[in-house]
Length: 547
Ligand code: F6P
Picture (cartoon, rainbow, N blue to C red):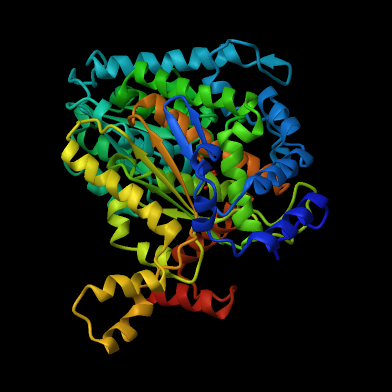
C-alpha cells in the first residue's frame, strides 16, 4: 500500500505516476537536450544531478505541492527555532544550533542555548589542542599516541565515519580508534598493541547507561588498572561525553573531564556536539570548524532556497516518489571515495532509525510505506559485488552516487579511471542496452546464430534505473559537513511528509529490555521456560553447551 489516504496531492501524484510509469528516461533525454541543466542544482562546491530519474517537470511540481500541503515550510521553521517537534520525548531538535555561526539566540525552555554550545565547544577544542600538541600528558608524563572512543550508534558511527573520511587531515603520530561492539574481540583487538601510559579513552554515551558502551568502558578501565594500578592515574586517561554527568562521575571520571551533551541533540545527529571530540582530536579544531561551517551553509540553503532549487528537499521528494509510488523498498548510497567507506553505515542509522516508523505523529498505524531500507558500499568494489542486481535484477533500487572531482593526493591515473566508472555506471543504469543493440554488438563477434539466440536475452539491460549523482570538488571538512547535512535534512523532509516523528527511536527499546532479562536467565542455574519454545530452546542449548 503506497498511497497516503488523506490528501488530494497524493491522488494527483498517483494519477501522474500511472501516466508516466512506463516512460523510459532514454526518451526523456532524447526529447530534451537541456534535461541535465533543468534537473541539476549547484550549491557551493557541490553539483547535484538528479536528471537521471523517472521524473518530468510535472512530477517535481506535484511533489513540491505535496511538500507544501504537508506544511514543510512551517515544520522547517519549527525545527530551527527550537519547538519541541520530537513530541514523544518532549524535546527540541537542534543539531542545527550546534553549527550556527550567527550567534543569533536559540531558546529552549526560555534559555538561550548558544552561549552554552560555544562554551562546551571551546572546552572540546582545548582538550583536542592539548592532546594534539602533546601538552596533555598521561599520568607517567608521556604524551598520548592513541585515543580510543568507546560508544555505539550515534556516539560511534558519526565520529568514525568523519574521522575515516578526513583521514588525510589526521596526524601521523596520533591514532584514533573506535570500539562499539560488546563482542569482546572488538576491544581486545583494539587494545592489543596499545600502552596504557599513552592511551586516552573517551567514553561517549549520551545516556551513560547503554549496556554495550558500559561493558566496554568497564573493560577498558580494568585493562588500564591491570597495567597501571594507581586509580589516580585514571584522570589523565579517561574522559567522557554525556548528558548524564552523575553516572560518568560515578564511573570514576573527574568532573572537569566530562563534556556535556544536551537532550535536544539526538544521538544520530550528535557528531557536531562534544560527541565529535574524537573528530576534533583527529583533524584539529580548525578543520572541525570547517565541518561545522559546511553543515551550516546547508542549513541556510535548506531554510532559504525555494523548494525547486533546494537540494535536500528535492532529494527527499525523489525518494518519496520511488518509495510511495513506484513501491521501491530500498535505496543505495554509493560513494566513489575510499575514505567514505563508513558513510553508508552512518546513513543507515541516520535514515533507518529516524524514519523506520509504522505509527504517525497522532499515534495511528500508517498504511503507506515509510523509510526505505538503506544500504551501500564504496563504489568500485561494490560494482564487483552487487551491481549485477542493480542493473539486471527484478527490483528497482534508486541509487545515490557521490564522487570528488579532485582526489586528495592528485594521482590522476587512478582518479580518472575511478570517475570513468561513475559516469559509466549511471549511464548504464539509465540507458540500459536494448535487444537490438545486443544483436548489433554480437554480429561483429564470432557467435553462431544459435549462440546469439541463447545469449542475447542475458545481455539485455532494461535501463530506466534511477540515480542521483553528487560531484564535489574534494573531500575536505567543509564539503563533508555539507554532504552530511544534506542527508540529515532529506531525512527530516521525508519524515514530515510521512507525518512521523523522525527523532525518537522507540524501536530499539524492546530488544534492549529483553536482553537485560535474558542476561539474568543466562547467568542463573535454572532451566528457562518462560519464553516461546524457540527462545527457551536456544537459551537452554546455549547454557548446556557453555556448561
Ligand atoms: O540504538 C539506540 C540508541 O539510543 C541510539 O539512538 C544512540 O545513538 C545509541 O543508542 C547510543 O546511545 P548512548 O549515546 O546514550 O549510549
